[in-house]
Image (cartoon, rainbow, N blue to C red; front, top):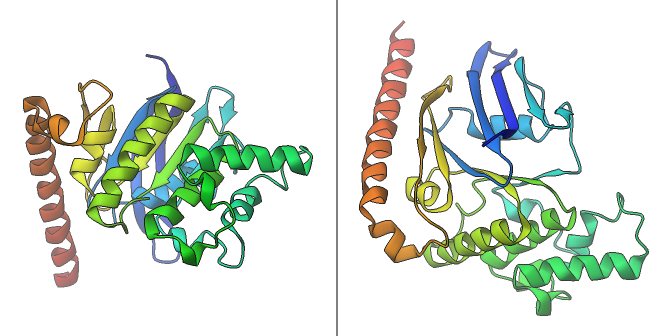
Length: 268
């Protein structure tokens, strides 16, 4: 399948201390593909996602779409952050928070804009909460607001930076299945960063493992499990368990390597 989003020999070095977050990272994502990115803490996953969103510049390499290079924020690419409580405004209603994502970029009259944003709330199951304030919602519902706001921009690509990590186990399961439903219904292309190996395998068509810092692509695996996926049945399939063991061993090896490198640096 032809690539739609391409990361080409990307690197990021922080000038303040001369350290690299990651080096020479290359991979591609097909249109309407779902790719998960995992790796040890500090390997540059979030930094990579921010660069892909055009929020930061790389020090090497490039990010390309079919329409050209990514050199800054784009209306067809949206990011959903981990800390949803910091990305929604507590003094605004749920509907007003979603409208903020589009009101300054859209030429739609207010009634049409409001209808568009209400439709996104319906998609994430929050239609009847439009006039609530964030403090009246659970954590999972607040993250749905953030997702609805991103969807209101009608993006082709959704970048997600550990969006479910702060949620309890049952709410995480619920939002995983909601995300898969939205991905298939809306034809999104998704790059999903997570620390959770099981989450990556359950959601994605392909999982990319980054090495310990500075991050490089250590492994890539295709996940040949059919959709729609089921929380219990999918996670019990032999191919799922085989891939989980392979990636778990590789992840542990990267954590051990990272710890050894850090200890060697301290001794030097």
